[in-house]
Length: 201
Image (cartoon, rainbow, N blue to C red; front, side, top):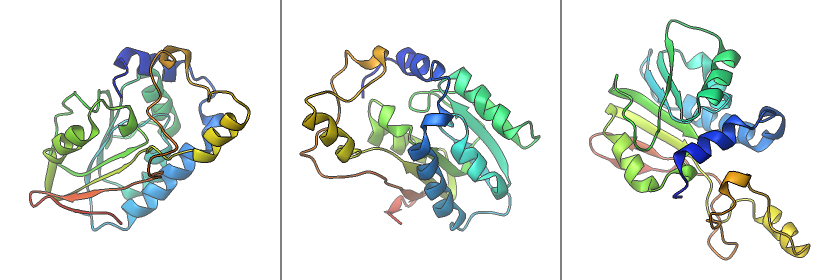
């Protein structure tokens, strides 16, 4: 997306009432959690979460167990997630750039991320890099927004000859969405490493 990382972190840090305005984010996280719950994971999986935000997906997967590394680009969002989940000896929190950073501590049986990948500069390359952090038989499960996401929202703005709102720190950047492109609102990917066989549930 080519948006400076500090701009993204600042925009989310300033979203004081994020949870109160994030029904779609919560619903998508719960849908992803249900797909993850259906996976054949070890009894105590090693889990890496990228872009935890305030913890919608982390909380939805709380019953999964295992050893977790929960990460986000924004220290403020990471602290909100920690406050939501509480302290646990099997859950660590760390500030991490999910695209360019190195989490260490792998390999992981599950790498998951809900609505963070759309902020990456080169999502395919980043996802391939994450695949290298997986244990044999591990799963990479993400949701992201596509060009056709929120089509009705954009159409409603077009009918009123107005532009959809964006955080002030991002307004100078061109929109990455176009109603004329194929619709892709929610996607999930499983990568089985090292064979790299990909399937979409």
